[in-house]
Length: 238
View 1 (tube, helix red, strand yellow):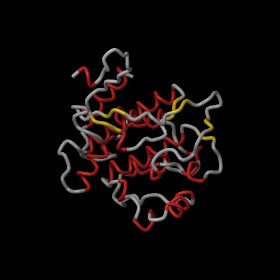
View 2 (spheres, rainbow, N blue to C red):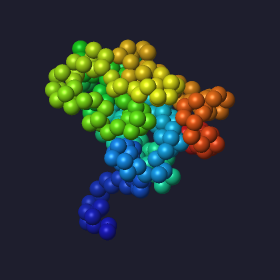
View 3 (tube, rainbow, N blue to C red):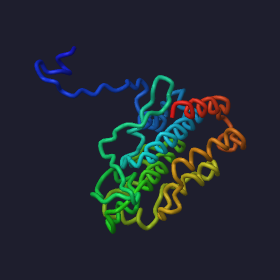
View 4 (tube, rainbow, N blue to C red):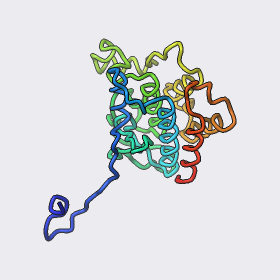
Protein backbone atom coordinates (compact mmCIF):
# COMPACT_ATOMS: atom_id res chain seq x y z
CA UNK A 1 0.00 0.00 0.00
CA UNK A 2 0.99 3.66 -0.32
CA UNK A 3 1.60 4.08 3.40
CA UNK A 4 4.46 1.61 3.29
CA UNK A 5 6.22 3.84 0.77
CA UNK A 6 5.20 7.37 1.66
CA UNK A 7 4.82 8.68 5.20
CA UNK A 8 1.74 10.86 5.57
CA UNK A 9 2.57 14.54 5.46
CA UNK A 10 6.16 14.10 4.28
CA UNK A 11 7.71 13.99 0.82
CA UNK A 12 10.11 11.08 1.22
CA UNK A 13 12.21 9.93 -1.72
CA UNK A 14 11.15 6.49 -2.95
CA UNK A 15 13.01 4.30 -5.42
CA UNK A 16 10.91 1.79 -7.37
CA UNK A 17 13.01 -0.65 -9.36
CA UNK A 18 12.20 -3.12 -12.12
CA UNK A 19 11.22 -6.56 -10.84
CA UNK A 20 13.68 -9.29 -11.78
CA UNK A 21 11.70 -12.59 -11.82
CA UNK A 22 14.68 -14.83 -12.53
CA UNK A 23 16.73 -13.60 -9.57
CA UNK A 24 20.49 -13.32 -10.07
CA UNK A 25 23.34 -14.94 -11.95
CA UNK A 26 24.61 -16.12 -8.54
CA UNK A 27 21.38 -18.08 -7.98
CA UNK A 28 21.74 -19.71 -11.40
CA UNK A 29 25.34 -20.70 -10.66
CA UNK A 30 24.30 -22.09 -7.27
CA UNK A 31 21.61 -24.29 -8.83
CA UNK A 32 24.00 -25.51 -11.51
CA UNK A 33 26.63 -26.31 -8.90
CA UNK A 34 24.03 -28.35 -7.00
CA UNK A 35 22.94 -30.20 -10.17
CA UNK A 36 19.50 -28.58 -10.30
CA UNK A 37 20.26 -26.12 -13.09
CA UNK A 38 17.47 -24.09 -14.66
CA UNK A 39 17.02 -25.42 -18.24
CA UNK A 40 17.21 -21.83 -19.50
CA UNK A 41 20.67 -21.47 -17.96
CA UNK A 42 22.52 -22.77 -21.00
CA UNK A 43 25.60 -21.54 -22.89
CA UNK A 44 23.47 -19.22 -25.03
CA UNK A 45 22.05 -17.48 -21.97
CA UNK A 46 25.50 -17.37 -20.37
CA UNK A 47 26.96 -15.69 -23.45
CA UNK A 48 24.11 -13.18 -23.47
CA UNK A 49 24.97 -12.34 -19.86
CA UNK A 50 28.62 -11.76 -20.79
CA UNK A 51 27.64 -9.57 -23.74
CA UNK A 52 25.02 -7.61 -21.79
CA UNK A 53 27.25 -6.96 -18.81
CA UNK A 54 30.25 -5.97 -20.93
CA UNK A 55 28.07 -3.57 -22.96
CA UNK A 56 26.49 -2.08 -19.84
CA UNK A 57 29.79 -1.73 -18.00
CA UNK A 58 31.36 -0.12 -21.07
CA UNK A 59 28.67 2.57 -20.86
CA UNK A 60 29.24 3.00 -17.12
CA UNK A 61 32.98 3.42 -17.63
CA UNK A 62 32.38 5.77 -20.55
CA UNK A 63 30.58 8.05 -18.09
CA UNK A 64 33.62 7.85 -15.76
CA UNK A 65 32.03 5.66 -13.11
CA UNK A 66 33.45 2.44 -11.68
CA UNK A 67 31.20 -0.13 -10.01
CA UNK A 68 33.67 -1.59 -7.47
CA UNK A 69 31.51 -4.60 -6.58
CA UNK A 70 30.70 -6.37 -9.83
CA UNK A 71 29.87 -10.03 -9.15
CA UNK A 72 27.18 -12.65 -9.93
CA UNK A 73 25.07 -11.54 -6.93
CA UNK A 74 24.76 -8.08 -8.48
CA UNK A 75 23.77 -9.21 -11.97
CA UNK A 76 20.01 -9.67 -12.15
CA UNK A 77 17.98 -11.53 -14.77
CA UNK A 78 14.72 -10.28 -16.25
CA UNK A 79 11.85 -12.36 -17.63
CA UNK A 80 13.89 -13.12 -20.76
CA UNK A 81 17.06 -13.97 -18.80
CA UNK A 82 18.69 -10.78 -20.01
CA UNK A 83 21.16 -9.31 -17.48
CA UNK A 84 20.72 -6.09 -15.54
CA UNK A 85 23.60 -4.73 -13.46
CA UNK A 86 22.61 -3.66 -9.96
CA UNK A 87 23.85 -2.55 -6.53
CA UNK A 88 25.64 0.69 -7.29
CA UNK A 89 26.06 1.54 -3.61
CA UNK A 90 29.85 1.42 -3.80
CA UNK A 91 30.16 3.02 -7.24
CA UNK A 92 32.29 6.14 -7.56
CA UNK A 93 33.15 8.64 -10.25
CA UNK A 94 36.77 8.82 -11.39
CA UNK A 95 38.53 12.16 -11.82
CA UNK A 96 39.95 13.73 -14.96
CA UNK A 97 43.14 11.71 -14.55
CA UNK A 98 41.00 8.57 -14.87
CA UNK A 99 41.87 7.34 -11.41
CA UNK A 100 40.32 7.52 -7.98
CA UNK A 101 41.74 7.96 -4.50
CA UNK A 102 39.71 6.34 -1.73
CA UNK A 103 39.40 3.42 0.64
CA UNK A 104 40.88 0.12 -0.50
CA UNK A 105 38.72 -2.23 1.55
CA UNK A 106 35.73 -2.02 -0.79
CA UNK A 107 34.04 -4.95 -2.52
CA UNK A 108 33.98 -8.70 -2.00
CA UNK A 109 37.50 -10.19 -1.46
CA UNK A 110 37.27 -12.97 -4.06
CA UNK A 111 36.41 -10.39 -6.75
CA UNK A 112 38.90 -7.75 -5.61
CA UNK A 113 41.87 -6.98 -7.87
CA UNK A 114 45.43 -7.47 -6.56
CA UNK A 115 46.03 -3.70 -6.49
CA UNK A 116 43.17 -3.37 -4.01
CA UNK A 117 44.38 -6.24 -1.84
CA UNK A 118 48.00 -5.11 -1.70
CA UNK A 119 47.22 -1.74 -0.11
CA UNK A 120 50.26 -0.22 -1.78
CA UNK A 121 48.26 2.60 -3.35
CA UNK A 122 44.88 4.18 -2.83
CA UNK A 123 44.67 5.16 -6.48
CA UNK A 124 42.93 2.81 -8.87
CA UNK A 125 40.57 2.95 -11.83
CA UNK A 126 38.26 0.96 -14.11
CA UNK A 127 40.66 -2.01 -14.25
CA UNK A 128 39.33 -3.24 -10.88
CA UNK A 129 35.95 -3.88 -12.52
CA UNK A 130 37.61 -5.83 -15.32
CA UNK A 131 39.28 -8.12 -12.78
CA UNK A 132 35.91 -8.75 -11.09
CA UNK A 133 34.41 -9.51 -14.48
CA UNK A 134 37.11 -12.11 -15.16
CA UNK A 135 36.27 -13.97 -11.96
CA UNK A 136 32.55 -13.64 -12.75
CA UNK A 137 33.03 -15.02 -16.27
CA UNK A 138 34.92 -17.96 -14.85
CA UNK A 139 32.08 -18.77 -12.44
CA UNK A 140 29.44 -18.44 -15.14
CA UNK A 141 31.05 -20.86 -17.57
CA UNK A 142 32.62 -23.28 -15.08
CA UNK A 143 29.52 -23.37 -12.86
CA UNK A 144 31.19 -22.83 -9.51
CA UNK A 145 29.93 -20.80 -6.58
CA UNK A 146 32.13 -18.15 -5.00
CA UNK A 147 33.18 -20.49 -2.19
CA UNK A 148 34.14 -23.21 -4.68
CA UNK A 149 36.56 -21.45 -7.01
CA UNK A 150 39.37 -21.61 -4.47
CA UNK A 151 40.03 -24.39 -1.95
CA UNK A 152 39.00 -23.89 1.66
CA UNK A 153 42.66 -24.07 2.62
CA UNK A 154 43.41 -21.17 0.24
CA UNK A 155 40.69 -18.93 1.69
CA UNK A 156 40.82 -19.98 5.37
CA UNK A 157 43.22 -17.15 6.19
CA UNK A 158 42.32 -13.79 4.68
CA UNK A 159 45.96 -12.68 4.90
CA UNK A 160 47.21 -15.81 3.10
CA UNK A 161 44.49 -15.53 0.49
CA UNK A 162 45.33 -11.88 -0.24
CA UNK A 163 49.01 -12.72 -0.44
CA UNK A 164 48.41 -15.60 -2.88
CA UNK A 165 46.21 -13.49 -5.20
CA UNK A 166 48.78 -10.68 -5.18
CA UNK A 167 51.40 -13.30 -6.10
CA UNK A 168 49.28 -14.41 -9.09
CA UNK A 169 47.06 -17.20 -7.75
CA UNK A 170 43.89 -17.60 -9.82
CA UNK A 171 41.13 -20.24 -10.21
CA UNK A 172 42.07 -23.26 -12.33
CA UNK A 173 40.60 -23.21 -15.85
CA UNK A 174 39.52 -26.71 -16.98
CA UNK A 175 41.55 -28.34 -19.76
CA UNK A 176 38.49 -28.74 -22.01
CA UNK A 177 37.48 -25.10 -21.62
CA UNK A 178 36.98 -22.79 -24.61
CA UNK A 179 40.36 -21.40 -25.63
CA UNK A 180 38.81 -18.09 -26.72
CA UNK A 181 36.94 -17.50 -23.47
CA UNK A 182 39.85 -18.78 -21.41
CA UNK A 183 42.10 -16.21 -23.06
CA UNK A 184 39.66 -13.37 -22.31
CA UNK A 185 39.32 -14.46 -18.67
CA UNK A 186 43.09 -14.64 -18.19
CA UNK A 187 43.51 -11.14 -19.65
CA UNK A 188 40.77 -9.79 -17.37
CA UNK A 189 42.34 -11.11 -14.17
CA UNK A 190 45.93 -10.36 -15.16
CA UNK A 191 48.01 -8.87 -12.35
CA UNK A 192 49.24 -6.16 -14.73
CA UNK A 193 46.43 -3.63 -15.04
CA UNK A 194 47.67 -2.54 -18.47
CA UNK A 195 47.05 -6.07 -19.77
CA UNK A 196 43.36 -5.99 -18.85
CA UNK A 197 41.11 -5.13 -21.79
CA UNK A 198 38.39 -2.50 -21.49
CA UNK A 199 34.75 -3.58 -21.47
CA UNK A 200 34.32 -1.91 -24.85
CA UNK A 201 37.16 -3.98 -26.26
CA UNK A 202 35.65 -7.18 -24.83
CA UNK A 203 32.21 -6.40 -26.22
CA UNK A 204 33.54 -5.37 -29.64
CA UNK A 205 35.63 -8.55 -29.87
CA UNK A 206 32.70 -10.82 -29.00
CA UNK A 207 30.38 -8.91 -31.32
CA UNK A 208 32.85 -9.27 -34.19
CA UNK A 209 33.24 -12.99 -33.53
CA UNK A 210 29.50 -13.62 -33.55
CA UNK A 211 28.83 -11.48 -36.58
CA UNK A 212 31.83 -12.31 -38.77
CA UNK A 213 34.03 -14.88 -37.04
CA UNK A 214 33.68 -18.47 -35.87
CA UNK A 215 31.23 -18.21 -32.94
CA UNK A 216 30.86 -21.97 -32.58
CA UNK A 217 34.48 -22.03 -31.43
CA UNK A 218 33.32 -20.66 -28.07
CA UNK A 219 30.87 -23.48 -27.41
CA UNK A 220 29.31 -25.63 -30.17
CA UNK A 221 25.83 -25.57 -28.62
CA UNK A 222 25.42 -21.78 -28.63
CA UNK A 223 22.42 -20.47 -30.59
CA UNK A 224 24.25 -18.04 -32.84
CA UNK A 225 21.05 -16.54 -34.27
CA UNK A 226 19.76 -15.68 -30.80
CA UNK A 227 23.08 -14.13 -29.85
CA UNK A 228 23.06 -11.99 -33.00
CA UNK A 229 19.53 -10.80 -32.23
CA UNK A 230 20.60 -9.90 -28.71
CA UNK A 231 23.61 -7.94 -29.99
CA UNK A 232 21.29 -5.96 -32.29
CA UNK A 233 19.01 -5.31 -29.31
CA UNK A 234 21.93 -4.07 -27.19
CA UNK A 235 23.17 -1.77 -29.92
CA UNK A 236 19.68 -0.24 -30.22
CA UNK A 237 19.01 0.43 -26.53
CA UNK A 238 22.46 1.50 -25.35
